[in-house]
Image (cartoon, rainbow, N blue to C red; front, side, top):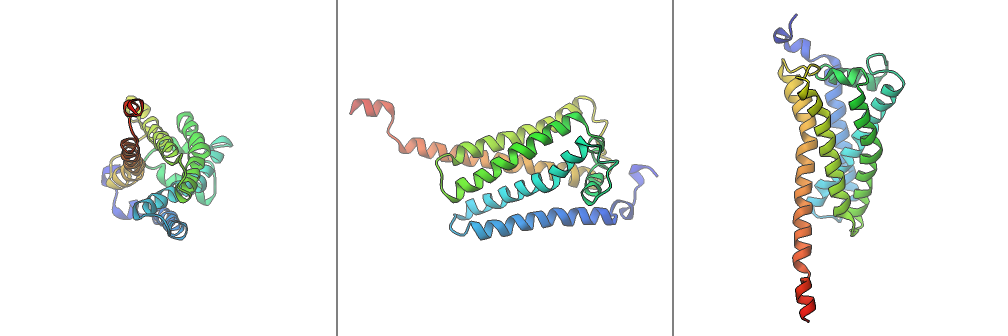
Length: 212
């Protein structure tokens, strides 16, 4: 059966449903943690905390096992619950099934660095630390770099590993789940820009200080 003729029943297997439920559960946990720890934060920062908790949960609980499986074998040859989730995503991007070196290298960086930065940023927001926006900018740049390097090499090769013949794989797996890690970091960079701008405007300029 060709990809173009796949029926909804063929697309939505039990693994598909479980995978989407798992993603929703991760977001729910992030949301609840933000409500618990961010009660004294502004509404905007509370939503930032939702994202940061969700971001770190995904990096640690989903991408962490992917790195382990890829270093000691492949997702395709692994047999566990997490492997089944990645096999489902691998229907849209086959590189995740076979330990693609670029993907594994990026995920190593993501799991180790980005998850730590996200948790440090949570602490900085809750404690109103001076380094909050430095960490926020660093994390966002890392996330955007990871997204670019995930797909740019593939596009330059003509996207041989991407399966875009149906709406689920294209718009949900590839566009939505990867696009979130572009849109949200972009918004957080804009927030940091505005905050740094306000901070700068609140300080007297060097010329004014010398004049005094």
